[in-house]
Image (tube, rainbow, N blue to C red):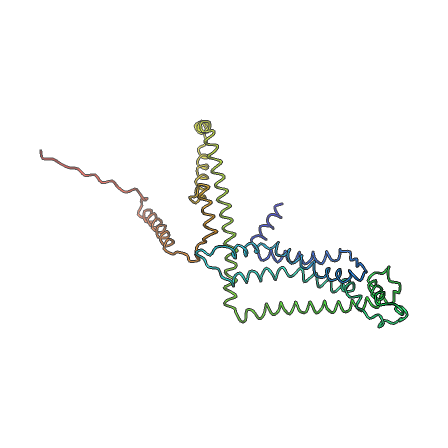
Amino acid sequence: MDKFRMMFQFLQSNQESFMNGICGIMALASAQMYSAFEFSCPCMPEYNYNYGIGLLILPPIWFFLLGFVLNNNVSVLAEEWKRPTGKRRKDPTILRYMFCSITQRSLIAPAVWVSVTLMDGKSFLCAFSINLDIDRFGNYSLVKGMSETEKIRLLARIPCKDLFENQEIRVAASRYIKCISQACGWMFLLMMTFTAFLIRAIRPCFTQAAFLKTKYWSHYIDIERKMFDDTCKEHAKSFAKVCIQQYFENISGEMHSYHRHHSSGSGSDDEDEDKKKSDEEKLLGIRAQDDMNKVLWNWHTCKPALALRKDNIDEMNGKLNGKANGAANGFVNGHTQEEAKKEWAVYYSKV
């Protein structure tokens, strides 16, 4: 369990690697599903085309939507798109970059399915067998004297071994259609590879500065959301811990004071006090439900502007440096830092 937990934490910390792994798993799953899928063409003129094209198009659409569902950045994109403007304006280029990134990853599994389906050729054979010119394959006596409807019914049975009597014509027609299907599959792979090459190679050449800007702020939005969630989890954990402690202290106050009076270990009490102080600090001054609801509502409706204040940071650093320098000077001069001395005034009277 520890190994799985460490692996899950690593994947969570590396969002890009995690999503690439999900895309790879979905691609392998699509290929495995097709190999395990039992292809059964209806061998009827009314349904052959719908079945073959549906098998070629519907599963890729399902894999495409599943890629959006499994991608955590979809919720980030939706929140950034629908949030009120507030003090932080929306940048359409960032939203476009995030959408394109999600779409590219979601297209991997559908592309694998379409490629495998075209390379196999069964769905192509089922869809287009009725469009064959059977006279090309010899044996004209097979269709001699048949009406057009009977000829279409005969061609619709080509994908089915048990229903087509002349196996030589069936094998020849199947090879012909599968050859066309594989050619379409290779053309599809070439087109997808060439498109990916254009996206990777040409886009940074024209808009490198804009690309870096949109990439940086899209990463910032993702990281900001994660850190806000982590801070809320830490606050909720400390809030619950302090609330439970106060509840038990109020219920069993007398017994708690009695045990503290008779306990001999003062070190444990000091540790408890330190833990309480740390939990109090993690509350960040928010100690009521209404206050926390107000903070969360303000974060949604009016996020802070992306301009950090330097004055408070410098003031805090100055205070810390002053305290550190004062303590250091006190130790160097041979005495520690003491409290301010009290002044006494003595008055004498001549009366």
